Image 1 (tube, rainbow, N blue to C red):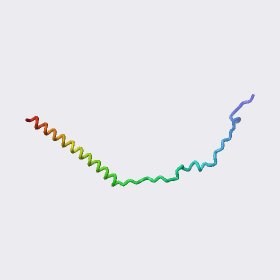
Image 2: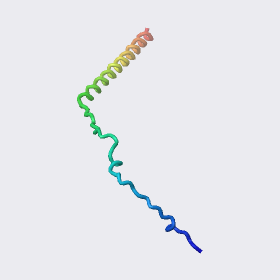
Image 3: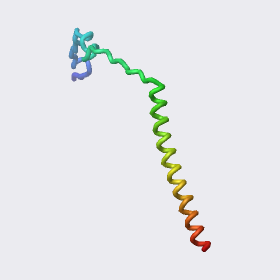
Length: 76
């Protein structure tokens, strides 16, 4: 009686010799990050905040004017 084990199924797997080639990136260009100027960001933020503030003042003044007109109309 013969028993088969793992010793019978030997297979030699060789690793490739060009490991250094696979570790290199495909693109050799260095990625540079663009710097952002904080003053530019502040100015953009101030512009958007001023637009929102003007819009809010317009809406608030329209509501107060409307309430005033309705109050005067109902008091007559």
